[in-house]
Amino acid sequence: MTEIRYDVVAIGNAIVDIIGRCDDAFLERHGAPKGHMRLVDADTSAALYAAMGPAVEISGGSAANTMVGLASFGARAAFIGRIASDDFGRIFRHDIKAAGVVFDSEPVAGRAPTSRSMILVTPDGERTMNTFLGISTELDQGEVRADMIAQSAIVYLEGYLFDRPEAKAAFRQAASIAKKAGRRVALTLSDGFCVDRHRDEFLDLIRSDVDILFANEDEITSLYQLPFDEAAARTAADTSLAALTRSAKGSLILADGKSINVPVDPVAKVVDTTGAGDLYAAGFLYGVTQGMPMEVAGRLGSIAAAEIIGHIGARPEVRLDKLAREKGLMK
Image (cartoon, rainbow, N blue to C red; front, side):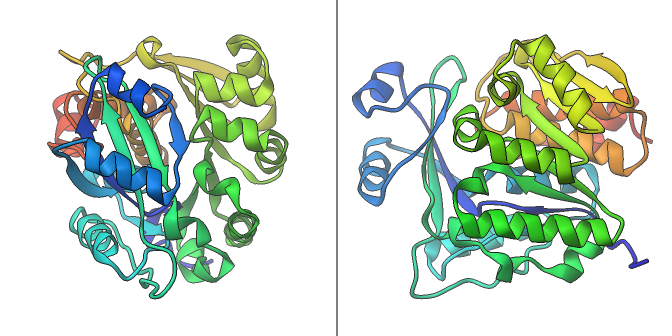
């Protein structure tokens, strides 16, 4: 069997996050549905960028956030995504590599620009994402590094990428490579609207190829079109391991016929929920790759999520392995 060089490799949208504050009235003026991700065109993206005022610009995208979180725990993380040969592409490449994530994807010139997301944070900490997908959605089977997939204990797939046939084919290709190498496949559903667009195809992928599923309450109830408890039961039947996050209610882990409730980690004040689910996945995946009990993996997810919602942005401000050691969950 091929040697494992990485704990997790992710395939996802390579997006530069542009994070700024606003009030609810700003969202209304710009037609942005609060708490959700919407896709915007180049003109809308430029208008929002000009109107939103001071902002933080940092490498982002759901799966990329998760890989940075994993690196902060001390894991060997890698990322596959498409960027353009432009200023935002250079920001993305430098930032994610500086965070300790392996990123070898070559920039592409003369095509669409690097993807970006204007993330508007309201005073209650809720984030509303306005994403111009740019070149990231042009990812296809040519980007899937067979060697990297085979050398990773887990390949992590980002549901947001599922909007184009080429990306779906890349997912299937990556899952096939992982299975042949004896590796596990993880999927995050990403967003309730994303689930609405691809419900049947997600269900087919989950039942055929996914070993580890991540979803929040809105996403899983949308997937099965059932109340949470019934949706959780269906999830347990469809995949061997799932982590379902429920905001302040904590998370529910479904593993080997067991249901484990994991509480949230306390946070003094919710400042920005951007990346909470992404960082929960980072903690949980770290626990899984290190062979920890499922309850401990869930606790690591809660710790990472709590750290991230206590400040602006989806990058940890302190080392997550340090936090975990302080909580007695890591040596």
